[in-house]
Image 1 (tube, one colour):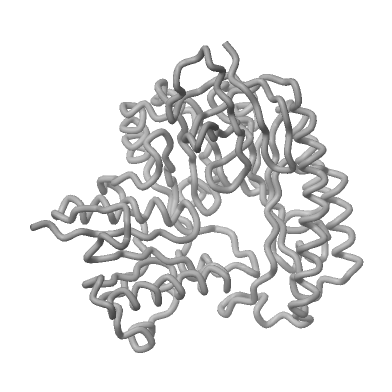
Image 2: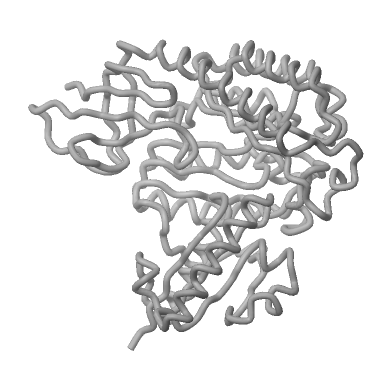
Length: 418
């Protein structure tokens, strides 16, 4: 009888791709993958250890599984991924866990077992990172950048194309670094052209995490001119003050960021810009934070993720002087989120009365949930879609035209049109 295996993947989409690879490997060995952890005999938890909050989530998940095992509801626990890679002594602290496994590294030809909805997928094109941001532990966990071979990537694209998925999300720790380890310069645009040529059945192609210092005119022109590439740029800037940017080792200045944003908006009218910000970085003064806050109000990013600085051992910033009190970091976080809430409400209000294309995700009660090109899976807003009575039932993964009838702080509301 086949053992029932449950998969619990925590953290980022890159982790999810690893979990899909592991699930595919174990499924091919005879395990039966189950959706509900409570139905499993063996559970594989793919952990994240990027920041304190992620580590707590991973440990809490493991402790919950240990409790199920103590109750006799679970036979084995396997801990995989960044937490196990980063901390080698976990077996002593968590003896109830049956096995610890580090990160996968570059895995070229494994069969994927889909853990996303059938209509979209993530395609990881590289492992590790070539940046050395002073706050980030990822290079310590994942190692230096290793780009997957273009031939291997295109084989995966062709499989997704055969499945006729609606959306393909291109991911990596920094996808603009693709190819730098091989040729000394970014090969992302070259790769994207090959992906486009082998994906005629795929609706949207979305690019996730573009490092600002490696955005080329060639890449912007491709995004601007190719209709299937989402007009969506995930462009983490982390801060805007030059002193803080230098301490972060971001290798870019405030002036260069401002110039880049202006260029992007000129070349790609209507582009959705997403960014990430860190508040409370060591020695960040109130004046420097106000500079950041005013910049966010002025530039008006369409999407914004704010993170409270997490002091991580093994990073350069861990030993920096001027560590900020938790209460101050929280106040700065709250101030930025409040400012972005107003920005988002203002930007969303401009969609009222407009017609946009929406990718249907699922139905909840009498309303369909969908996403626009401006909404990446899991991290951005939703479009609540009411289907006109005269229209047929909408399907997951279907693209529909929606007239926006109401706008919320982060989401849109609309009705399908004929």
